Length: 335
Image 1: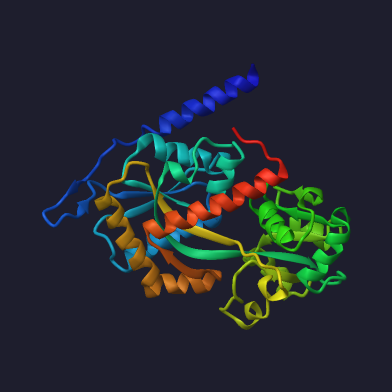
Image 2 (image 1 turned 45 degrees about the vertical axis):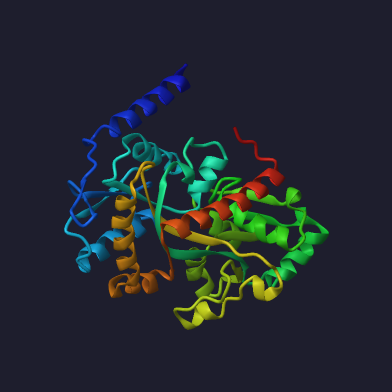
């Protein structure tokens, strides 16, 4: 009874937040261009300080710095449910003045049944950046390459324990699974530990687990300090930005035919018109090409990967198909 009451309270709060602003549609001027009626709300579906929040704030800052719009773009944090609270807010309001930042968890949360909303329930506007994952071990570990690690796992998949922040079936887990599968490892027997309290690096460094599956930026400090070895990054080509990044090998150059892009892009509500999409698409392209955002990418180690609405949608379709196959093979059940 208590659990049910809590769920009803949360659902009520979601409905209330969905009614916090009047729904407006804007207008189309004589040139066929959409004009918003008010300032734009950029939703970060998480608390302050994470990847979604940082991306949203850096995009908003670049729009202001480059004078790309005569309307302000204000960032609003709506944490909860791994993004599900924010997605519910956007979907229920269906207001083109509300857009949001997302990344692969928009796939995973829906595919794992944690939210009724996935990327197909929204309008992909544009992708702006690509970030990548990394697989790292303690500096004194016996493996020097990802292929050496997978060679041991091909013989005995359960001999290696992998840790990540994500829950089973989500990003840190599945990015490792995709590469292990491409290397011929029996993915059904891989031991994955979820440490959502942020202790995954500590667990690798103290020897509790063997491998951490994480983001490149999350592994960099310990790798630079020579406490971790990054066996491979998930990018299609070696990363650039500084001398250390350029030393990190890709899985592809080790003969493992896989890659995983941690994209971050802009989405809008489900029923956007062509004019509304074009309005945001033009601004997003201006951000991507700006000197201001180029400095941001370099500062955070992000790659430039602009995709307009149609290209982004096609990319998401392909990624969703690949992820669905992997989750099915692992036996994850979905509604």
